[in-house]
Figure 1 (cartoon, rainbow, N blue to C red):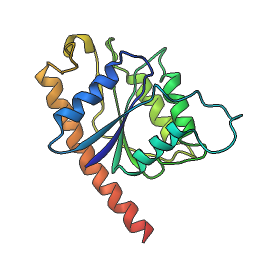
Figure 2: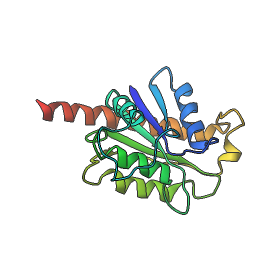
Figure 3: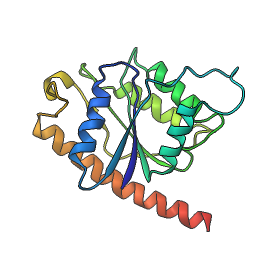
Figure 4: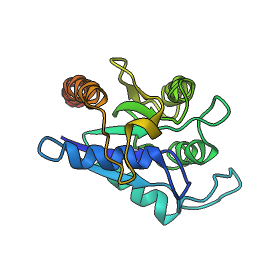
Length: 188
């Protein structure tokens, strides 16, 4: 399956980007995971006029070319990052690549709650009018205490965490295939 994977942080060091890069390598025999870096995305403003910036057009193309989307969301102040919110705003302004697209939210955090609150908020945002993503409601991957579970190179070192990630991905693959078939039949 071809998956567009958005790292929801504009920090230079991001455990969520590292998580997606690990997944791209670990699942390379099953999935083609395209990790999208949002650091170059400008802050969204309704005052912007004209076509979307080139970086947004590129993200739009990459999401449209994918069978599914994974968004790895860090958590700041019990919420998604302003950088991720800005990207989602851009993707619901002039372009709408998430509409009808199967999306799974995941997250990694240094804290015990493992980005759980940001994922709940992100799901609410993704199903709103103008975005209309089809968010996976199966197993939720909250990677708590990431500094204990990931080495400096970004490899997950805990087999239990890897096993649960495999289970989440298996469920998401089935969900994405079913959603894509449904969307295809609805378009006919």
